[in-house]
Amino acid sequence: MSALPGAGSKAGSTESWGSFDEHLIQGGGSAVIDMENMDDTSGSSFEDMGEMHQRMKEEEEVTEEAAAAEEGEDGEFLGMKGIKGQLGRQVADEVWQAGKRQASKAFNLYANIDILRPYFDVEPVQVRNRLLESLIPVRMINFPQKVAGELYGPMMLVFTLVAILLHGMKTSGTVIREGTLMGTAIGTCFGYWLGVSSFIYFLAYLCNAQITMLQMLSLLGYGLFGHCVVLLVTYNVHFHSLFYILWLIIGGLSTIRMVAVLLSRTVGQTPRLILCGTLAALHMLFLLYLHFTYHKIVEGILDTLEGPNIPPIQRVARDVPVVSANLVNVTLKAVGLAS
Amino acid sequence: MAEVDESTKPLFAGLSDVSISEDIPVEGEISVPVDSPTQDDEYSTLDEPVKETILRDLKAVGKKFVHVLYPKKSTALLRDWDLWGPLLLCVTLALMLQRSSTDSKEDGGPQFAEVFVLIWFGSVVITLNSKLLGGTISFFQSLCVLGYCILPLTVAMIICRLVLLGSEGIVSFIIRFIVVIVSFGWSTFASTAFLADSQPPNRKALVVYPIFLFYFVISWMILTFAPSSSSSTKTVGH
Image (cartoon, rainbow over all chains, first blue to last red; front, side, top):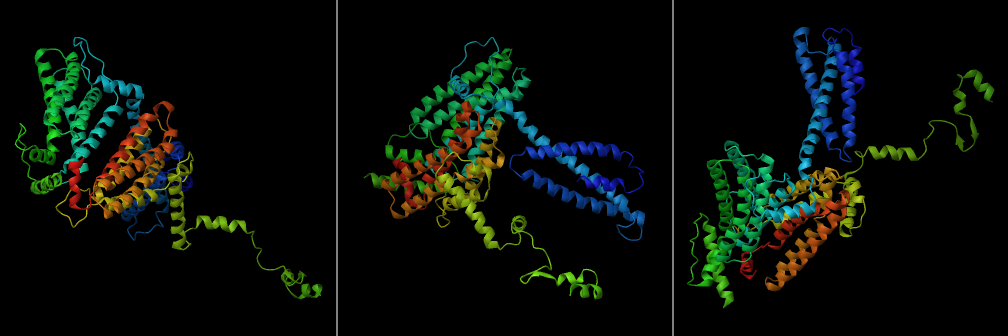
């Protein structure tokens, strides 16, 4: 690496390469930084391999480029002889460029993780307190309430919700035609968290509410704690009335808390109504959706086992014909076993 | 005799025939000491037969398996990390968890791709999480540890399959439940023994929880694995 600039500089004329010497000094500096970055990776040679590949590729490209560029000048053939000096300088320059690009890419990669680091700076006690507080509505809405800006708790809650959804889908024997169980669960939960946060943040921007994107993500993430608790209970204990009670109480509490925080940060009746109404509706409806979409078969079994007591809400029809065929088999076997 | 040779032949030609004693002729090349050729051989493993390479890698993987089965606080797993073992375990688990293609009506089992992606995506997320919480372990070391600690769960999967071959009922379910719970605890304990040391002491719980969740999901998939349609009656049971 350090030999090549030397080879380039001894090649002869310095037509447009007068500035190359400055680059040379700077190139030396960034090469040093580059090596330090390499040493930092404790034990993994991933970046080394990546850089070697990159360099080999760039050298190939450079020789092709140089050969093609010099074809016009030479005229006779695509030889290296007459243009050796030029080629050497170009190769050196390109390699230095590649090294600089690699160094800045590596720096950006590490810097990106560091951007998120302060949002994960929490203690377990803090996380526990925030989880419990997410179910306790605040009283004061005339004074902007403090919202914790951390991402560890919300992310863990979203993953927990994914795990609970998977559990619910397994026990209810849900069939997903175009896709996988895992993909559906992850897509639903992350889509809700990120999508609804962005949407409410956009509405908050329109309604002049004082809340940042990070705070909104954090608020909605902790609001999913209520959902996790309700779903954990009702996926295992299958009573419709229990679900409705829990939906109202726990879902309602976490919604009221989020709404109160938003109310405290918004002025004016109409903006408050729009913002908080939207959030409340989306949050409660999401819980309803999660319960009913992934819970078909168990309702069917309960239907047949309970006999003439028909639950108050009809099932929403889905186009999964395999499910209804299975339902008959399963309930027949269940009734056969019971007797 | 030597003087006669010197006058007729070039200067040092006769020296090759001069011998100090009968059995040590001073001629030809001076052989290097025995140690350095082995140093050269270490870097040129291209020339060794394929069997040796494979056996060496398999031995390294086997040694790490033993470390996982008896988790002590050693740094062997972290120092020479490799991803062959996790790949082997992941593929084995995914193949065994695949739904059988003959039962096209019972679509309740996961696909191969699902399990594979779950394991690797989950490991990446846990690694990123532990790095963001201020861990000192590198990316691939963490992947290596998490992958190797799937070994108890793979063993549990094999046992569950064998039990399912025998009988299906409440007894087999209890056996499988116990086996899976034990292996889940073992996996979590083994991985925290390796990973938790790299964290600040008051934040261990923050790192352990995602690992717990990750192995819990895998254990759940193993426990609910049903190779034939008759085991769906278990959903009524629990």
